[in-house]
Length: 218
Image (tube, rainbow, N blue to C red):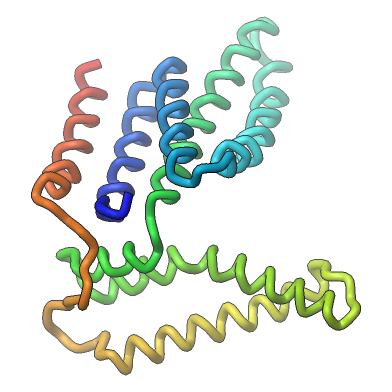
């Protein structure tokens, strides 16, 4: 996966969303979900992708059952509708997670910097992508700090320190970007750009177009 440009992974995930939402077929949703889970497991070499997909999809599936089963024309119709919507949601989550598991955040930031988009937008996207991993790491460190001081970590003594640290790191990144000349005009380059072949560039253009054509035809 190191030879795969991060933008190619993101486009593949976006293409999967186009297919799932555009075709709106349970067999298509099931196929996309299975492929995404296999790719994710091959990348992570563990069952974390399956566990995360289930953790996010099960509450939604239960909500679908509560919404559609009691008010459907028949009990069977409600189950079918809830099942199809739950399967589609699970496929979307699996496709998104599979695309993200093949992406390394530093490589994605580099790819955004070398892409033909404004550098300030690249910085905003890169910061947004880094927010959740950084917040998770800060929360873990704050929990460890609470345990070392003999306190039991809970939301009451974690929320404020985590928010302060997240804002602090965001300010540090902004200062660093200003020092590096973020606001200066001109093209941005990186010392070691992520791999990006002509084939991958074509894939990022042709794959979404093929998905849109498929949705229109079918």
